[in-house]
Amino acid sequence: MAAIRAEGLYKVFGRRPDDVVRQLSEGASTDEVVAQGATPAVIDAGFEVQPGEIFVVMGLSGSGKSTLIRMLNGLLSPTSGHVHVGGRDVAELGPKSLRQLRSEEMSMVFQHFALLPHRTVLENAAYALKIRGFEKQERDSKARDALTLVGLSGWEHRYPSQLSGGMKQRVGLARALAAETDILLMDEAFSALDPLIRREMQDQLIDLQHRLTKTIVFITHDLNEAMRLGDRIAMMRAGRIVQIGTREDILYDPADDYVAEFVKDVDRTRVLTAGSVMEPVSDQASQAEYTTVSADTLLSDVFAMTDRRPLPLAVIDGDNRTVGVIREHTLLHAMVARDAARKQDAEPTRVEGQEASHG
Image (cartoon, rainbow, N blue to C red; front, side, top):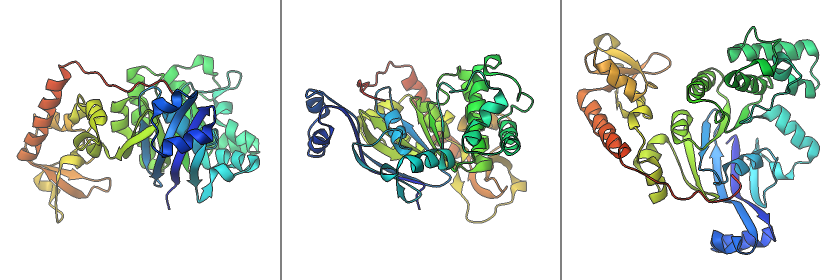
């Protein structure tokens, strides 16, 4: 069973929202309904998120992605459509059941940390458990464990004003982890951070996911972040999901000109991994014959390795099993893609579609 299933989701702000949904479902354009005083933020969105998956919703400002994530936990009610979490329709839950959903099944990590300034790091990390009625000793224990997971052991008695932006976001992540929910909703969680700290937080999330296997819906406007984190990516434009697929699907088989324009300047070697270009092996090749590389190693790092080590490379999974091999012709094909991307990087590009909406 899918952890989250969305069916025919619409969210319309403004006048006569139900009538606007009917018009849109019958083929009316966004411009037509906007002229009537309505703002369609999400239009006919449907998808499933599988347990243990990082599902990234990617779109420019105003594409509707933040509105979409707030319908998943009932912070916003859909104008039409359904969200199923654990087999229950979120729109049909009463206030008490919604509070239970948000505290016990789905945690949320915000862009601007949402920390309580007068509470310590430990108290902030334990706050969701306090709301749920956990005794102090138990909630502090769980919060300490979560802070250790995010690298903040020893900072328990500091206050948010004493932390850097990256550390504040780690506290927000620890609070979500301490709640021990199966689902994490992350709305532009790293967008307020500088590039270096942002990269570190991405690394940390990837490492935590390997250990904890949460179900994560991650909202971002940054394509490189989407490509780095997402098991699958939903591309949004003007309220609509225009494509859902793996990073390889998005890069090599864009659904339309909008997606193609979006991804044309991506350096594939910093997105694709050894596992995505390897040749599969039918039996367990001897690793002693090859230099090994992890399946999730970026191609840019594979290129750097080949300057010092001979091909072929054996690709191994998390259990140290050989799952593929990278030979010279495999890497040559990837180099062609890399050089094409570099050539495109030198050309100016503009992506249309920064529509004013709720996003």
